[in-house]
Image 1: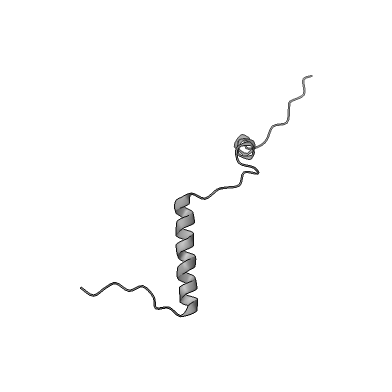
Image 2: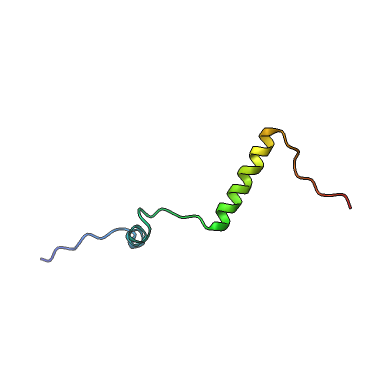
Length: 57
């Protein structure tokens, strides 16, 4: 009787680990820029700066 080789439940996990460390997701540069903008806005709000407003037309 031939024994079956154990295989992972999701074969893509092994490929992700080989490609990028432990399968960690790297954010795109666009996502990083947006996160930086949100953080800057949050810091401005905490410091007491006025919020963005649309200019009057």
